[in-house]
Image (cartoon, rainbow, N blue to C red):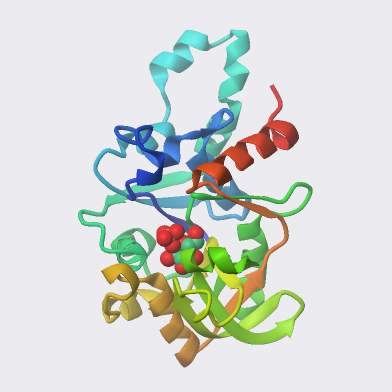
Length: 275
Ligand code: G1P
């Protein structure tokens, strides 16, 4: 049973400036719910009720969101507006939330290592909340991956086929197909050009990581963009042991980009939101 999920949320969100000048990008609402809450709900649904945030300066509102707001709740108690708080109350009732601050942005691998004191020596999930994933009527993407972990006991990355012109934005895997939609990873490259990419299978922001990843990251040199990359650490894990890549069921929206964010908003408004 995986109990913990890491949320690296220290990034600046420059693509959404000026909206993100003084507000964390993870708090931008997709319809009426902050982006990060979708990820936390997915983790809790997968049984990962211990949510660990690697946060940074200017991100205090994330911690506040996953806490009680006495004044507000007292004010609207008994009114018709109370039901609007039910989703976040449910999350708060079922989850435990811990935070650590990342002082310098040295890459996703570094963010994971910063979260080590909150995770400890156990396998854990990781959600990059920029990626909003939905699978109506079925288990969430992290839940699907937790199920696979029970079988394989090794790190797992979620992957999706992407167009050649998109490939440079992602970590890309090459692997041996085990069965439909499941690969044993042989190689992974962070942000390759379309020509260099070993396949069109891009990693999206859902991971299950085994705790040996921490020691590997400690030994990982900066890679693409001069940052310590989780992809490079996973590549070593793949070489020495086992990493699986999983083509998940459901839909994923790239809310790290404005068009993806708008697409997610339209989708949630039409198919998920109810007032
Ligand atoms: C990160 C990872 C990359 C992955 C992507 C998914 O990149 O480094 O391997 O494909 O998330 O969203 P970022 O989007 O932080 O540049």
